[in-house]
Length: 229
Image (cartoon, rainbow, N blue to C red; front, side, top):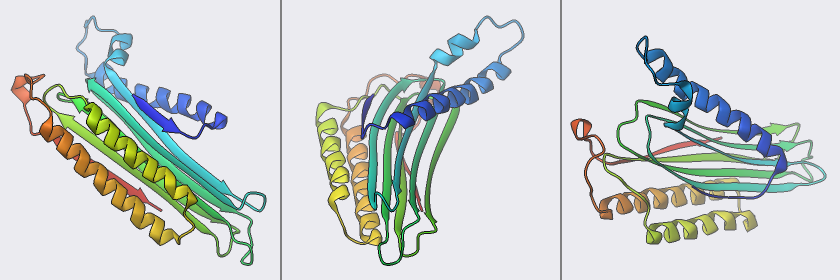
């Protein structure tokens, strides 16, 4: 897993809690489906579940009028029975005036790759932008989730990772932008489209080994989920 973001100590506790909830949600389905007398334990199920949790969080106010946070994470989960993926962007502007407005922008990009047939997929992608007593403030949150699913073993090549790193730097460069929110949104959408194109090319160029489960072979897919607020 490759993970890049601005460090925020307060976010660590939330991530631990989210990881636990996602793991429980995925493993619960397996446990209830197991026949009576099955020897597989809950800990075994947990090892077969892949978890990815990412969040960008920006908050602006009178003391800190401009805030920007971005997240660009890659999770290569491989072969799993279940996958829990949660991606979230939250932006909040609080208590600024029309004469001195605030600006808060949060953007989270999450890439998840999986191999084989997933018995249980728990994927959420959400964003929330709030102006709290903040007339004239610019507040934008965008969550972009990319799920790659292949029937055969697949890992991103070094070249693909280098290209994703370039897109990550371009996402981070938006921190310096003072353009209107609708322009930032258009740039984020454009970057997301480039991520999809890159991932599709990476899947198409990857060597095709034996299917993980030949009885449930399917076409490789790259799915983007987008939520903006």
